Length: 332
Ligand code: NDP
Image 1 (tube, protein in one colour):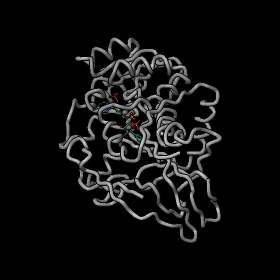
Image 2 (cartoon, protein in one colour):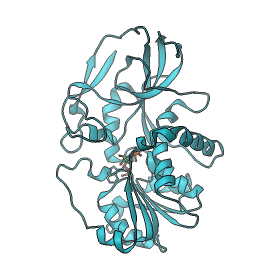
Image 3 (cartoon, helix red, strand yellow):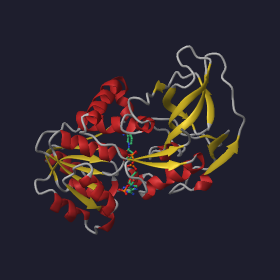
Image 4 (cartoon, protein in one colour):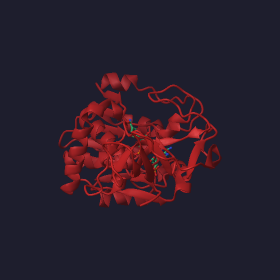
């Protein structure tokens, strides 16, 4: 058995030396517990926030303790009345190959309904984030223009497709031509901007949105948000889902002031955390599963192989190495 500890609070971009692998004994289940074998591990940008020693909506990770993220695991041994050997469970677990749990915070993942990795992506946290952000905060209307940043990633690719389902014109921003091709061909996005090869994002967004922007689904914050706000329409909605462009910053970056734009154009700008919608997760999963089944939603993921690759896969999120949801496969 092995576990991965956080041993340094990263300064700037995380490094593999911020993590440590440790050999540990394989535990056995006690009464009321299951012994779980890790199969798929989700790596997510928000984990960077938990590596800071700062109070947030979720507790920071402790140093010299295992990192946690969403994990799909199989029950190897059960002393739990609800679950039996061979059941699959998903939820917040430690970066360990084997661990025990009372399963109180876990839920079943059915491999007959969807591939197991989907419970970490489109039918998991990132799919739900796109769903609630778009439908609840975005108030999407047919014929409107939706701009999505991080459009080739886990949340952004689903947000873009939900925009299309609602009959919007969708423009996606991503970090390579390959990703732009993917979002256009696979997800039917109307136009794309490669922000890494564009010197003037304000001009690029202006050219791609002749009718302005009604809804901006923002996954990245920073200068791309500043540029998008120049084209926001009256009564526009800005969904502040994430700000990965700022996660490795050490200071408190400032940018153009948005308040005058918000007032003049009656713009709604709202941040949210997917767990705000906890009591509606079943509704979200049902709708996402139905769209998947109807072929209206497509699911993209980047699967990296091997427990030892977990830290690097997490770091690679900040270099845009993933298309769709980044997942590490540990076992079958
Ligand atoms: P992604 O699958 O989108 O992976 C991260 C992507 O971000 C990379 O592939 C990269 O793509 C892009 N990126 C990395 N660095 C930068 C940068 N400096 N500027 C612009 N883009 C960058 O991750 P998720 O879909 O899981 O998360 C997307 C966002 O949503 C994150 O900000 C995350 O924190 C947030 N989030 C918020 C939740 C909530 O409850 N509010 C829940 C889940 C996620 P590229 O090649 O295009 O640069």
